[in-house]
Amino acid sequence: GLYLRAAQLRARDKDLLFYIGECYRKLDSLNAAVTYFKRSIAVDSTHAAAHAQLGYAFFTLGRIDSSILSYVNAIAHDGDNARYYSNLALAYKKVDSVQAVVRTYRKAIDVLHPENVSYAYNNLAGYYYGKNMHREAAEAYRHVADYDPSNVQALFWRAQSFASLRDTASAVAAFEQYLTAIGADPGKELDRAWVRKVIASLKNSSK
Image 1: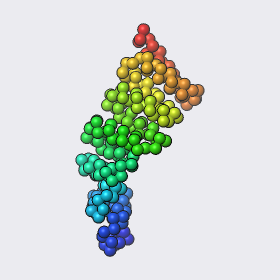
Image 2: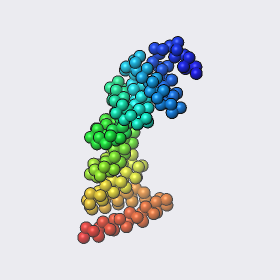
Image 3: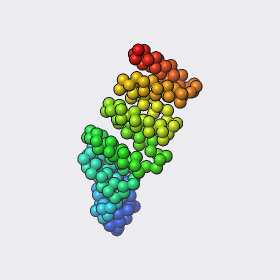
Image 4: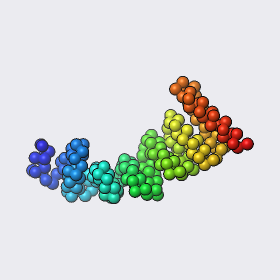
């Protein structure tokens, strides 16, 4: 109520209009959020956060083309914000634009701090795997493990990628690397048993 009354007095205050939009977004009143984000942008077309949150609201409303345009506009005014690229990639996924998804995740990787790069590579790897692009997935999972050695699941999915490619030697090597990484962790006993069976099966199939 106070924000709305203030907006009547300060109708050209881009930040106030943005905050009202955020309040409506958090209340899931998305059409109202869209209205106020647009009003904020009308005052300052370079307001990257308003473009981005407008993109989020459009995405949630299922207006994917509008969401894409809004995230593109956000990036145009703040090209170093990795979250904008990641959210844009999610929107591109909705329209099944493979090249755009990959390009956008790679842009996120370019601007991320090295400590956070593994997250973007993991998203990219999972996307590749889901698209049966297993060679690309294996390479992306390698980067995940390089940037975050604690992510042993990246090693597992890298091995699975090689297995899907029927690259037996690489799959065996990757599964063995996974076994080494999980070590004697008692919580991974079932994993160890399953992976050992897979390794044995792969070795037998290559004879």
